[in-house]
Image (cartoon, rainbow, N blue to C red; front, side, top):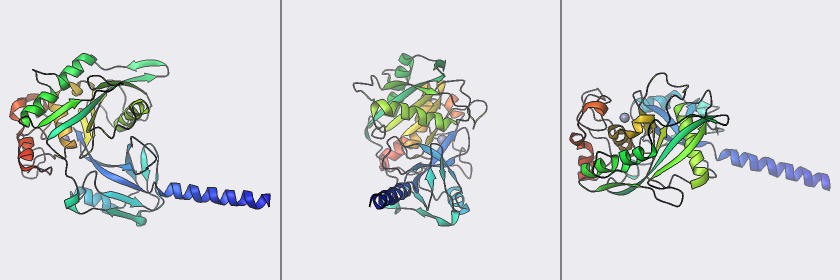
Length: 320
Ligand SMILES: [Zn+2]
């Protein structure tokens, strides 16, 4: 009798394991846009038991998925990849059999619409890094400067410029809570030798989430990574990246302070694409979500066209 009971418990345990694993066989697709760099298709595993889901690489997908991505047929944060037997760890969504993959695309009229007016709360993660017990990487600039450059009044700040560009219709408000003041929260991540930028951003969001709970309820989470970290996916300098139609944007140290960079990346969060001229995605230099050298040289107040048009039309699709 006892043996039978143990057997039944083992079988039940096995069934539970199978049914839990099944929950991980799908993930939501995101187009992640890098400045500078080519866009990448990543995904967020749909594990209902987890908060602050990580954006991870996709391994073993069929050519069809990459063709759809190249052809602009993927709706970021909307389309879902379903793969039988797939698993998801902290860095990768692994598909064991590319023949057993479905790409689910909801009808376009239910997808990709984000409000471009109203108040949107912004949480800024100011990240330091440690090796062992020692803090080895800290942000170049002070917390006060960061608050000023993002939320400051009476100067060129992210908040001010979105306000001006939207003719007072779009307010980027700092998160205020018992744990967060002035919208900025300090976190520390561990230096890991093969980490990519995306992994450090995921780690920072997880570290903040361990104290603050789910960050997914905020409209925008800006992750300001410290300088001099080594990244396995980049050599030399980089500026920032963000998933289109997502809530995260990730910056290389001082670029968190440049309004042109933060407006560009948060523009991607708002589902704005690069404006096009001919076949060159970076050909039109007139808008904020356009071109990298504009980040340095174009006067801030002259580059709000996309946002104005989007607000005027109450649309959130690519501006051509
Ligand atoms: Zn971009």
